Amino acid sequence: MGAVAIEQPVKTTRLNKQRVRDGAATAVRISQQVFDATRQKRVLVSLGLMAVLVASSIGVVVSAHENRELFNTLSQLQAQRDQYQREWNQLLLEQSALSAHGRVEALASERLGMVVPGREDIVLVPLSSPASIR
Image (cartoon, rainbow, N blue to C red; front, top):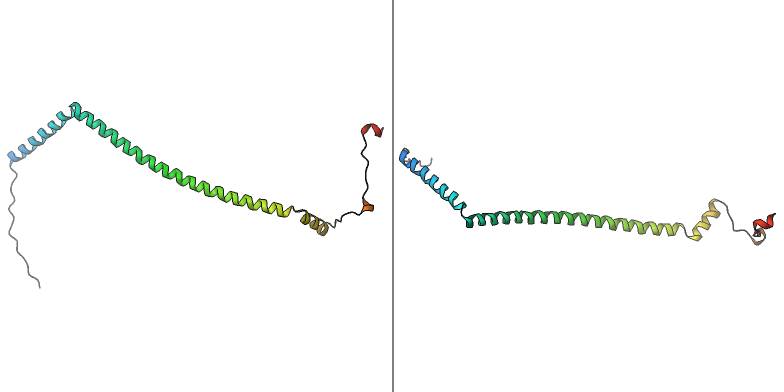
């Protein structure tokens, strides 16, 4: 088993009423000096400049935060634009492949049974004006 240390009892001192009164009087005197000092023009100017400095620093922080948010939004929109551009290019490629003349001709002959007419099957219709019809 370990050793046990026995401590001497500590004497508690009673608060002296005079010491309490002196402490309160000192606190009142110091606070009075602070209030008197704030009435001086230099101190007021310094406090005003300090308030402007704090407001300015808060404005800088808010501005930097908004700048970061806007930059993130810009990056997302640019990525979305790039995605749409890739999709548009893919659709243009697909359109040109689907509308190729050879493909259209092959589909017309396979699915619809269409053929290119021979010379004997072509009939030329003369262009007539409305006056020659009467």
